[in-house]
Amino acid sequence: MIEIRNLYKAFGDKEVLKNITATFENGKTNLIIGQSGSGKTVLMKNLVGLLDPTSGNVLYDGRDFVAMSKHEKILLRREMGMIFQSAALFDSMTVLENVMFPLDMFSSMNYRERVKRAQTCLDRVNLVDAETKFPGEISGGMQKRVAIARAIALNPKYLFCDEPNSGLDPKTSLVIDELLHSITHEYDITTIINTHDMNSVMGIGESIIFIHQGNLEWRGESKDIMMSDNKLLTDFIFASDLLKQMRQSIINK
Image (cartoon, rainbow, N blue to C red):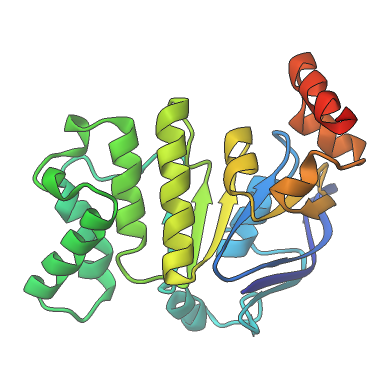
């Protein structure tokens, strides 16, 4: 479980996050949603230590990340898996070598054990047949699945996903969503997904926080959104007239 308490972040006079308090639970797909410029990306960067909060706390199972020494933060990061907006694979490495990379860097396994672990992760994302290919030889959706395999190679307790469906078609996005959802439950990971994909929100949003202009404006589950009376949230989710009509039709039933 990850908790943030009174998290505040400013760049000079510009307030980006305004005393946000929230909990991200184990074994759930926790989503951060909001318009561009709302602060959700800055929030994610504060969670993983790419930025330091101006004030407040980030607790990993009770351990205060903000107060840790540099060495302690390095050790904690080994418990994290990350999936970036672009798959961020190494073009000069095969699929198998990409998944092995964190194992080569951080594990004490021998070479044969590292290969076996990487193959297990590729099998989990249904890509074991692609292990000898290079990233440029596979589709964008397959690249995202390789990135997921790499992210789980070290058995992380915490998984961070920044717009994992960016650039993917709707059908492939559903595959990625289901994969993240099932892996989260299977390994009891604390998964945090930064997204603006409404299919993801409604499909796998087990715990959602909505950020607006640096404030935490709403929290709940996907099933709560349809009946929410929070205008900021509904204006964001149901931006088109068609979606607004569909929502009103459901409410009127």
